[in-house]
Length: 78
Image 1 (spheres, one colour):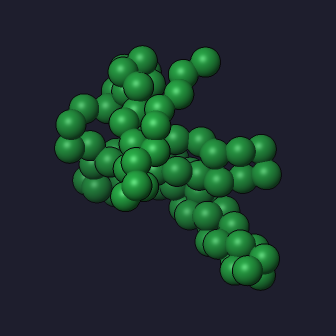
Image 2 (cartoon, one colour):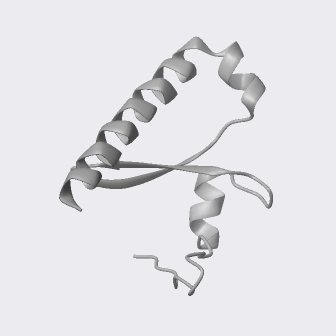
């Protein structure tokens, strides 16, 4: 099990084994997908690849929809 500390400003460092598996390097962006099962972290591909890969675009659009739904549910809980 890997863990990292959350700092006062909300930032954290992804452990190296996580960065290695996701292929993340300095300057890359990650995407967090919140669902009933927990949170998943994905490397956010470069903007150009979204246009070039329809399957990836479809998956990211579906993830965006889930994130929007979760935001609405969280607002209702507040």
